Length: 145
Image (cartoon, rainbow, N blue to C red):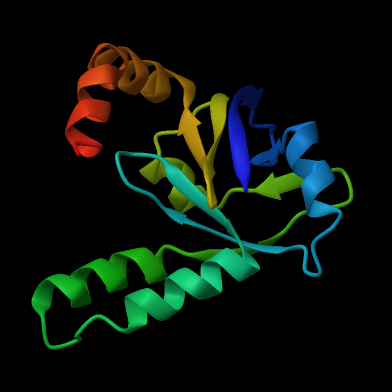
């Protein structure tokens, strides 16, 4: 599981280094293969191979006869790229995903339980500032008894 919020930069070869805590966890994984794709709210999603396979099964189970399912799966899977975490803990971001996430140089890497989200720093700051005041009311609405 992934937790925490870290600020990093994208290098001239469109790579970023995962936080040290994440790299330590990855050392214990059987596979260094990850999947990066279009996320929601303007970020990118990065999944371990195991987490990706679980999500893939759920999405493949959606009815292909429903237009919304087809459209979502097309955008989600066509945007995916298989990436290897190199020996220095770097991840390459395809150009089309950088464009999707409007990623310039500074990024925020956020651990969100089963996935890692990669945000352009300005987009993250905007998301955070718009939502931090709603945090308690979201909790109330989500966890009503």
